[in-house]
Length: 159
Image (cartoon, rainbow, N blue to C red):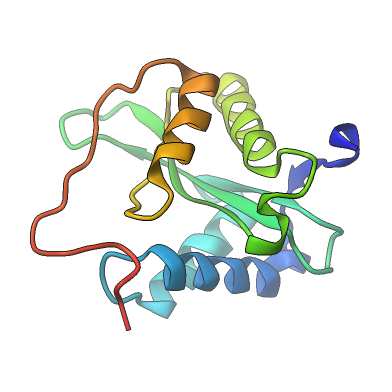
């Protein structure tokens, strides 16, 4: 079953579904009110390979089970590019299903970083089920390079 789960590069045929899963991810985990236009810009740019790429699970043009949005950018102190994970999301109905979709999306992201030859910056900003997510990321990456803290807010509380 695990070998049947494949992450593929998203295309413009996936645009509507990529927007749906991005909005689902925001509804579940956002720290602040989403800007739909900004979401659409990031997704479109990644699907057209304009400083980004998107890995998805599901048939092209069909319902997606999950995805990862990666953008190329620079850190505040450097001009060198890094691959920044913006969102990695698996739909709730597929999280406990066999196949390890989140792990597959992480592996796909690591491969994209290797192919591009630039560092991958990836993590999670979540107040829900954080411990399990951290264990998954530690299995894939080793010890974390840092941690986030939130003052005067909480993820998943945006209306």
